[in-house]
Image (cartoon, rainbow, N blue to C red):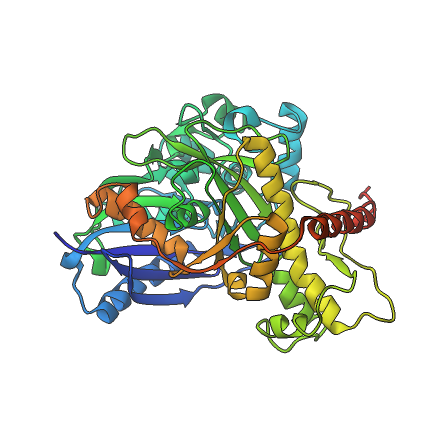
Length: 502
C-alpha cells in the first residue's frame, strides 16, 4: 500500500501543499502567498485562477522535496478557507470575476433584506447560521446579480458555484472535461443554504434568495473517494477528502469524541467543540455546524465560536503603537511584570462578537494609573485573548451541557507559553499543544488517508497524535473569579460607544 498522503491547504493569505507519512510525520512542505485584492473599502477578493496555478506548482514542489512520485501517494485531501465564493462557466472553466472572500463586507444590504423577510435569525433552525456577510449565500446572490445573464445560465447548470474546495476539486478532477462539481458537508454548512439536519441544499431558502439549485455542487462526505486527479503533478492520485479549514483543524487535533475541543489562535481565534451526532442549538450566539462526515457514517456536529481580534491585537501594538519590535517580543515584555497591574484591554475594534454581540462596543484600555507601564499593557493585551476564549468556552459548555476536560491548541499564538499558562488557569482546564502545528493540513491528510484505507479508523488515527507540551491550571479559584469579574467590568466599559449610522 502507498504510505504517503498529501494535503492541499488553501488558506486566506496563502496556499500550501504538505506530504505526510503513515505516522503523520511531515515529509515536505511547499507554500506560496497569493494577492489580496481590495478594489473598494470593505471589499476583499482573490483571483481563483492564481490560486489554482499556485496549488498545481506547489504540488510539484512538495513532491520534489519529499523525493517521491505521485504513485507513492495513497490519496490527496483539500482543506480550504470556507465561505469564500467563486462563480465560473462550466464550458470554459473561466471564473466570472474574482472570488469574494469571507472577510468581504459588500453584501450588507442583501443581509438586511434577509433579516426583513426572514427575521433576525433567518433560517438558523435549519442552517445553524444567522444572516451575515460572513457566509456564502449573499455573496453568491451578489455575483449572480452582478454578471448579466449569470442567473439564467446558473439555472441551466451552465454557471457553477463553489467555495474554494469545489473550485479546486472541479479543476483538478478534469475541469471542462467532466470535472467533479462537489463540495463536502462542512463547507456546505457554511453557506447558509444547507440544511444541516437533512444534509441537503434547502430548496425554500434557495428560492427565497433566487439561487438556482442547478448551480450548486453535489454534497459529499468529508472523507470519501471523489475521483482521480487528472491535472498536474498529482495526476492519477485519488482525491479523497474535502474539508473546511476549522473543521480540518478539529480532525487534525484528533477531536473525535463529544466534548473534545480545539482553539486555533490566528489573526482572530476559532473554537470548535465536538457535540456528537446531533446539532446543539445555541442560546449564546454560537454557530451550529457540521464537524465532519466519514464515508456513509452518521455526521458529527460542532459548536463554533469566533473571536475577531486576538493575534491582530499584537500586530496593532507593533504597527500602530510601536510598543514592540516584532510579534514575538510581546511575551518577553509581558513577563517583565508579575501580573497585569489591574490593567485590562478589551479589543472591540469592530464591536464584540459572541457571546456579547454588541456592534456598538469599541476597544478600551482600562485601569491605568501612574504605576502602569508598557509591560502591563503588553500583558493586558495577551490576557485579552485568553479572556475572550474563556467566554466562548463557557458559552459552549452551557449550550452543549458538556464539561471541557482539556482543550487542544494550535496557531501562531500557541507558541506563547505565558499565554498558554494563563489560558489554562482561566479555563481551569489543561491546555495541550501538539507536535504538528499545521493541524489544518494534517486534518485534510487524515480524512483523505481514512478514505483510502491508510488507517482503519479514527481510533488508529488518534493513536498517532502526539502532544508536544501540556499546561496544567495552577491559579487559585478566588483569583480566577476576581480576574473574570474585573474583565466583565472592562467589557461593560467598552459598550455604547459607537453611535448608530443614520
